[in-house]
Length: 124
Image (cartoon, rainbow, N blue to C red):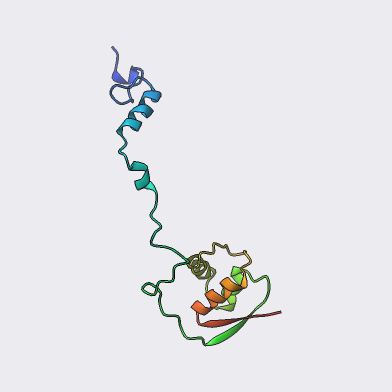
């Protein structure tokens, strides 16, 4: 008595003898634009594009902060009274990818500070 699971290749699709036949079968079955449909569409996000439709109005400047050289995300978050994850999210909106202990340049710091109503002043 021979059950189906005892046969060689019982899990393979119909007409396939081994795994190399399966890959050939899958290549034949994929439609023309299949791979292009899998790639993400990032056209909605362009950090260099100045779009007035999607930009939220910035809050008024209420405070000034002095920025020392070598400012990390964690120090900036404490200075702006925000959580580090909020600062990282704001940096990502600007196209800067940083982690908590990364040192940020003054241009990015001033843009993030402006988002939260602060004016950044470069310290010595």
